[in-house]
Length: 211
Length: 284
Image 1 (cartoon, each protein chain N blue to C red):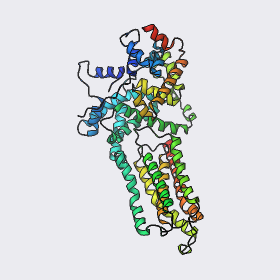
Image 2: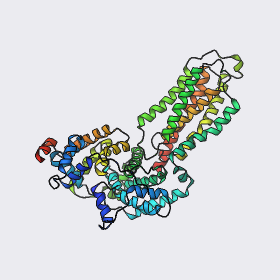
Image 3: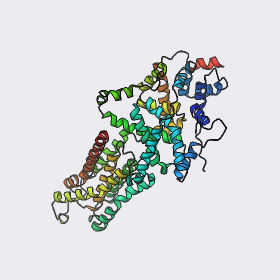
């Protein structure tokens, strides 16, 4: 279910642009859950589709590289353990995103108790954690702004913008009502605009200017 | 192969597409995006200032394909998980794990019921009070045990709600004990002092509930948050429920020392177990 541009681009890249229809996420998951000779290949395909997306979500959420890898591994371990619970009528993307968010929350609960200063004395770790994923100043500003959002708002933006989920699925993933996640998203986007120095014309201006 | 239903798009996809492409670059997308944004405040924020925020968000690079070593690590972890009995148990469907938790308490509860029978004061004890007590204990125990095994693909229960239900378990047990006795204690029932009998009730109650906690810990996939404590509260209520159905002592002192302490001790044990698990994970 590659609903995002990047997802479709990756799918097209994998198919070599030859117009070969890629199996949907749900078809891959069904094959994986069914077991048999195709299961391992289906799991690898699911991993290849989702690991980059999840990696981005986890790192933007402020996780260090080693923690992000740990949570990513945990996420796929839980995908594997929960496979018997997967209902073929459900979309895979929100299902996996919810597992990833739960694994990240579990890590966050543990990190509250972990003294961060222990790591600062380790030059190797400090070097690895300080290394930016992308050096562009604008991207750094964006990540810094995302990092300043409350977790509840950032999660909703991750799911709505970066994972491309409809609000109904975002609501299911975070355990809130659709109207509540829309409010969180609106506040989060507005706060991002402030932090990134936006403002001015507003939507009214865009609408009148475009028509 | 079954075809999965595609989720209903709520119109936001058009906005994301338009913003990523640039409103000026894709004038064909702009009308649908703007129509949708008129009723969707989050999308309106994305489109404001000519889609400036959306453009910024779109610059976030798509993560490159992940390190192949990571996939190898995941596959090794899955293989190890498949070989361990714990991994196999935790991979059972959630309905079966929940059933197993309920089944874990049955042997002792059934044996206890057959061995000790119902309370001997049934003909004088107010039925409504007994039904309310048993009903409240059973409902709270079921609810807490159910939530303790919440699957990892569902959003977690807000911690405040979980702790509220742990508190309700304690409160229900306390209320049942502190409510005025329906009749004076019959001397014929006092074959031992209330305190002596209280210890017996406490021991049995904890023993009856303990399998529920152990099974929940074994079958729980993430064990996060308050799940162990919720399971412990459910276990305490099961122990209290069985004692309320069997023990004819109505004295407040006996109920406080022998029945309420079942919930208190198991909840305290659950808290300690939860803290110990976190400390162990921190070290690991």
